[in-house]
Image (tube, rainbow, N blue to C red; front, side, top):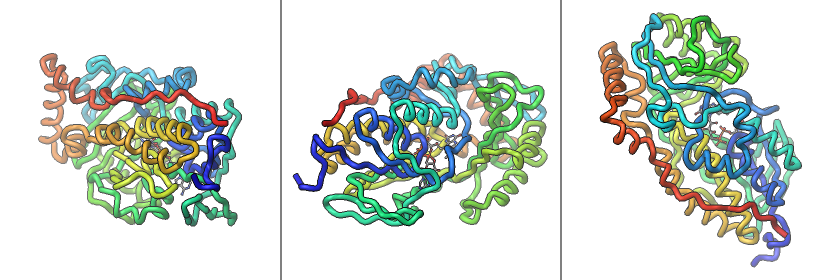
Amino acid sequence: MNANSATPTDQPRVLVSGGGIGGNAVALQLLRAGIRATVVERADAPRPGGQAVDLRGPSSEVAQRMGLMPGIRKHQLDERGIVMVDSDGKELLRMPAEMFDGKGAVAEIELTRGDLNQVLLDALAEAGGVDYRYGEWITEISQDDTGVEVTFASGGTERFDILIGADGLHSATRRLAFGPEEEFSTYLGGYMSFFTLPTPAGTEDNWFTMNSLVGATSVGLRPDYDPSTCKAIITMRTDADSTLRRDIPAQQQMIRERLTGGGRIATTVSDAMAAAGDFYFDELARIDMPTYSKGRVVLLGDAGYCGSPLTGQGTAMALVGAYVLAGEIVSNAGDPARALGRYEEVLRPFVATAQELPPGGLKAMTPKSRFGIRAGHLVSRLMTAKIMKPLMMKMLSGTDAYDLPDYAVQTIG
Ligand SMILES: Cc1cc2nc3c(=O)[nH]c(=O)nc-3n(C[C@H](O)[C@H](O)[C@H](O)COP(=O)(O)OP(=O)(O)OC[C@H]3O[C@@H](n4cnc5c(N)ncnc54)[C@H](O)[C@@H]3O)c2cc1C
């Protein structure tokens, strides 16, 4: 063992880049095992926003093992299923959550992404807190056999035993340690946007209302924990346009154009967008890494294996990934190479299934023409037929078979 590397009696110094779901979850598990990580988050405060995210199968098991359920239950949404409507608001099809035993688009546990992040931050504070630095990010990384030297935007340089890149789809850690985003990212054919708006009059309580519009666009309203607000979700199929990145006026203009003439929900969403305090817009993309780690730098969540919101598994992958990564770092505290190798070995089978897109992918979700929309509804109706249930359940239970290792939180020292 190298003299400078961590031994079971000295805690590894861990830096986490990104205070999202993956970053906060891994910091929490490490803290409980006696490793007080440093977390740098580029935003100036916890990022609000995001609509309902799903926890099911292994990710709900991880949430339980991490003791997050009391916090989650406080914010859990009472979402009863999906109702598809036309542009006049007329109901076309209703799919209650129990139709697929909580394994369909509406899962057994739903809460908003912002609320889940807050549950993690509260748990971190309760466990004693970590060295959390908002408005900070990494500008340079250099590593050798004994550690990673990191330069921060604020100017300082520090050395760590392990650097965890949990900084999302457009991860800077991945770019600095592995190479440009284009090498690992596959555009999946469109963009998605989420934001909070006052619940429009006439919205059915506790149901996810969806409307497919002519022009490869869908717009929906999902319940929020506070019934006076709800979450808009807009999905658009289109060619990639790199000029949209970070250009919020251009993103909102694109959405406005897509929603024009789309009826009641589309108009309400379009009108509310500019005032939203948590407007989120990003491309739909998948990240495939040949390896999750390089030396002592390791990727977690969207940074390493984004599947896009189309999979409904982004949060699940970040939570399960954080649990496995922390478990392996703690179990192999003196041997980062072994810990990061084991993390990849254990997690890859889960990721392979979780990254799979639903049948038909984005095309099926956003038909172009009136005919396509009608055909889509027909397919959805067929899927909900009793006779189809065994096949549907098989398709929807992909990650359930994953054998989640048991990492009892072990303390070091
Ligand atoms: C505001 C927001 C809303 C979202 N809403 C939804 C949604 O409604 N539905 C859905 O399916 N998915 C949504 N996502 C994506 C979803 O959170 C992830 O797919 C999933 O939870 C995996 O989490 P992650 O921790 O890997 O990434 P993320 O949750 O994206 O977190 C990454 C974090 O890293 C931070 N960051 C970025 N760059 C840097 C940097 N250079 N240095 C330091 N920090 C950095 C970001 O500010 C963010 O806090 C949203 C993400 C965000 C940030």
